[in-house]
Image 1 (cartoon, helix red, strand yellow):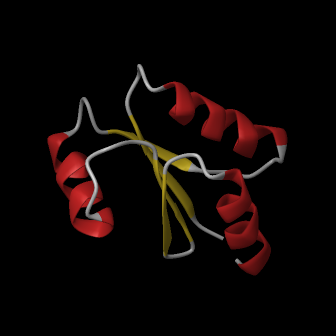
Image 2: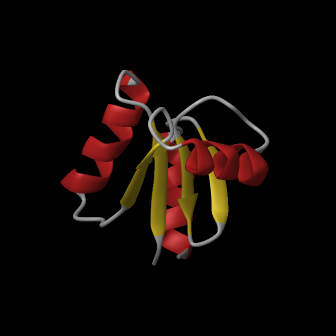
Length: 77
């Protein structure tokens, strides 16, 4: 299962998402879109959104920290 999180350092929901994954032992790759313009462009291209967090779980895009959607995506991955 591949989990990617596009974040910014000041995003409270990004921190909640990372805490959620860590508490469940789910590994993830994090990209700071405030510091990496290419990853910011990739995030917008993939999600159609400029807000963070953008979470990708095995190809499924979830915008924001939507715990129910994240749990569904993890159970299907």
